[in-house]
Image (cartoon, rainbow, N blue to C red; front, side, top):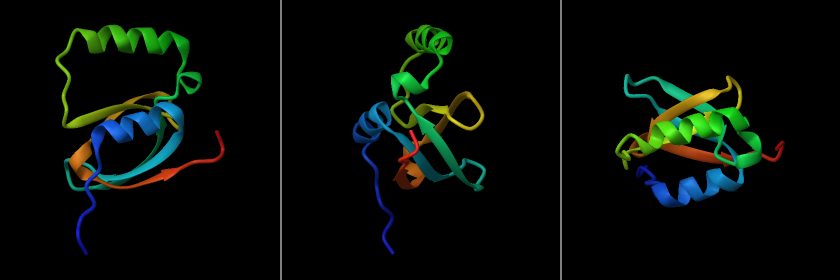
Length: 92
């Protein structure tokens, strides 16, 4: 079966308007699923400003996507090339 390639800009657009579950392979080879979002009303206000300030001081890495982990309440990232599947969640 051919590997599906995800477009980073489209995925970020979807994350900004939805909660999603992303299935991906970590750099160490472990499989992982992550309930996450970039939807403003799902991000804690104090974290949004801290994260944005931090992100403005770093060059953007087009190979990764930083997201808010809805289960553990923190910023996580994954490599776009390692995404296997994205599922939209209705619970949010």
